[in-house]
Image (cartoon, rainbow, N blue to C red; front, side, top):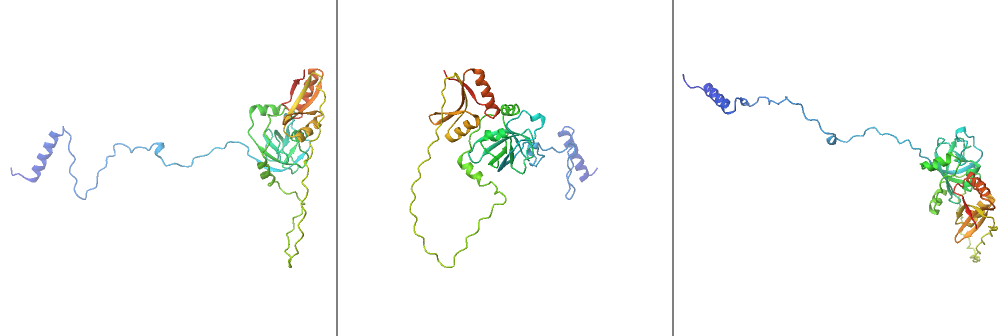
Length: 296
């Protein structure tokens, strides 16, 4: 039988079967034929770290954020029965009842923590109960800053039980200066007229004589009663003699100077029971840190 090209191909295939362990070699691809892809296994899936980043759904924290300045009102608040025990109470138009707020008097920088119990403020930035206003040392229409804060569980428990929260630091002078600039101007305040330039040059006025340097105001005298009695109630220790005298006058106490501090005290009392009643009264007015001291 004559040798032909077809017989040569058959011999090559047989040799490939013997050398490859019985696996047939794929036939050679002819030019122009489509490529063959293996589809026996699915493509690999990219890991999460390899996928391009995307904006997923975002949750909300639920925290109340409110920070504003303005004029406070002082009035009796309509209180829901669940807040009847709260003494450091305020009304706020934007913060729900039960939220603690931090209030700063922009005149003095004194800062306290109070609890929102109502919403009606009569168009004021915040409405203070009389006890809250007394603890803050302000009156009606006083400029204040009020902001919702996240208070500690101990402070929230104290406020809900009718006691004062832990003491806050006074606001620094630089912060007070910035906050006072944000206080809105009351309605009805006349606008400052612009100066009209004069057509003719005005003659120079004689230089004013230098004024005498004013003498510093004397520190008000503070009566200190005798401590012969056994017990006193120390309400606070302040660095300002004027603030200490005002607090003592409001509580019916007195001031005892000690170095650079001025201690506001009640008493003296002849027995500890009387001192305890005075201390409880100070706590109801917002001074929960008041302490009973033995004077012997």
